[in-house]
Image (cartoon, rainbow, N blue to C red; front, side):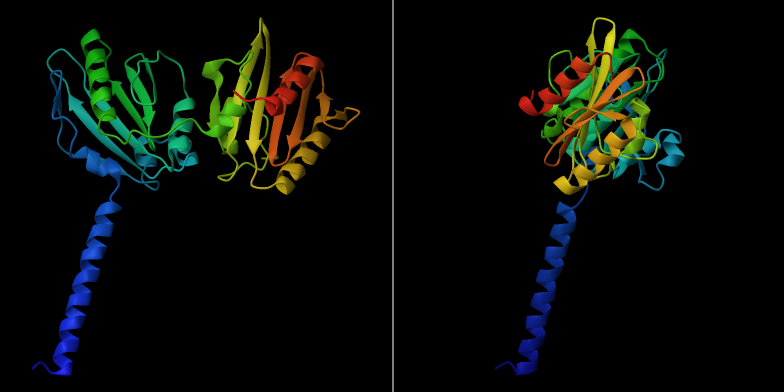
Length: 307
């Protein structure tokens, strides 16, 4: 018959064993999907061979890899970047593969919208190919594949590699719902940007160097350009965590823009028409509209119907 101390020792051992298994399972489940994906990357694609020596960068070391552009990825909550090189066959140039893991699918979409030039090629959730560079987003990942020299063969290898990587990544993620608040009429589809960082906004439309809009990680925003012939206007829609904060920003904007309308919902600035309108915690801002009527119609359209 076992003594109580022995029974206690066995119980502790079993408990510690169970805890150890749980910790091991949790660590496996918490392992970044991108790192797991690296083990499945093709060794060769259309004659290009994967070079040894994967490189991983985190938010602190990313500047050593893409100094000068890392701020864009950090603004969208970069978690890590895995970099690979595929060495070329004779007469061709290498392919550079970067898999960026962002904070969320919405943030991966945001990085993708930072540069939407190029041709959609049906890879991932959305994609663009231009001048030897393929980019696409899928799940919380933004993927970049660049041929160091553009040839027809390298272009095909780039697209083939992109398709194979997309098949490895989680097939999830949709456009952030705030994007649907941009009215469709007169909207340049390629102009749509998703953001929540003032630096990103000022990159596309330098209007708020002091962050009067109080943009941050808790303020999803969509920016779009609207055109009628040669005329152009800009619309920004922001969702705030609460109506009080949205109202504070609204008041600050109206004071900054200039003369208010009779109902206080918009104002003019110089020779352009710029204004804002709020409904609860959602704020719409129109900038540089060529007419007061167009500005007012855009503001109203945000709250009357979505995309």
